[in-house]
Image (cartoon, rainbow, N blue to C red; front, side, top):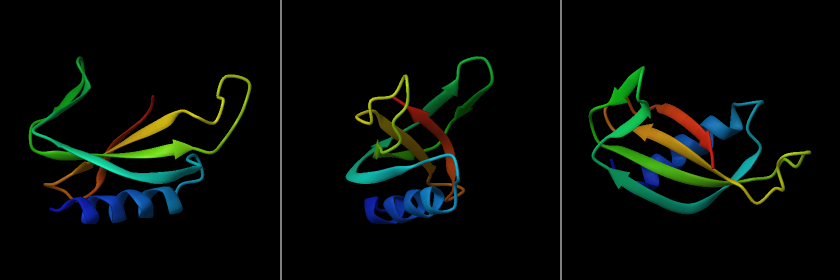
Length: 84
């Protein structure tokens, strides 16, 4: 999977989610594995981390935070989303 495919999958995830309000920055990083939760699950195959700027503001969010959207190269789906 190339970067552009991962970005398309992440964009579709954002478009279909009512919980995420973000714009993809165009930055993405390929990693060999991703630890979603040290106690629960580790993705043991390459993933793309697609970054998106948070658009929703609130008492704890200033709108400048970024989402890390983890796209699996194996399943071609979003495996995890973290607000960083």
